Every structure is written in C-alpha cells, then in structure tokens.
Amino acid sequence: MNTDRSSGNSNYLKHEQGYRDKALKLYPWICGRCAREFVYSNLRELTVHHRDHNHDNNPADGSNWELLCLYCHDHEHTKFHEYILYGSTKEKTIEAATHNPFAQLKDLMAKKKD
Ligand SMILES: [Zn+2]
Ligand SMILES: [Zn+2]
Image (cartoon, rainbow, N blue to C red; front, top):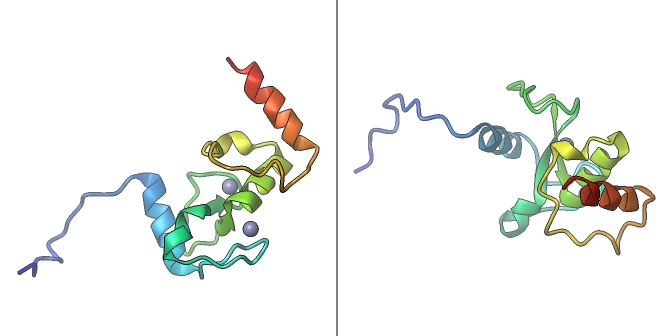
C-alpha cells in the first residue's frame, strides 16, 4: 500500500525532535556520564546535550551532541550555570540524590523570577 516513501516529503520536524532522533540513531542509548543504559520504555529520560551549549549547532556527524540522562544533563548545565537552556526539569526528583551546592541556588533563582 504505502509505496511512496521516497516522494520527497519536505515536511521537516521541529528542530529539537530532529536532532534528538539523529543523536539517538548515531549513539548507543547510554548516558555519557554515569553509563546508565536506556531502553525504549525509559528513553525519554535520555536527553541530548550540546557540548558547546549552543542548541543551534547541530552538525550532521553528531560531534556536538552527547547523550546524557536527565540527572547528568542537569549537572552538566549546573556546572556551567546554563541550566536555563534546558528547561524541562520539573518532573525530576534529584534533590535527594544529588546534594550539590547549586541545588539551592537554583531554587532561589527560580523563586526570584516571577
Ligand atoms: Zn547519567
Ligand atoms: Zn545540555
């Protein structure tokens, strides 16, 4: 039935979806920091980190991407004080797991921006 797969569909996916898909095809589903392995059912916890923190820099060879689990990804951005680039941290419960000094700072800053 569906034999027209090569009919030049120029319907581009959203930016983020695009590079995430590519990164997940390029790299094994393993966190680059803690080596946690992922399967399809928890793949949403595996995120694409941009090594230079520039989300617009998406070379096709994946050289600017790194697969990180939510926890390590958050840590990576906290380290650089650039966690703002990575907004979807709400449903995490890392406070208990990672007692880093920046956790409170992050809280404070979140409260301030109203
Ligand atoms: Zn990790
Ligand atoms: Zn990142």
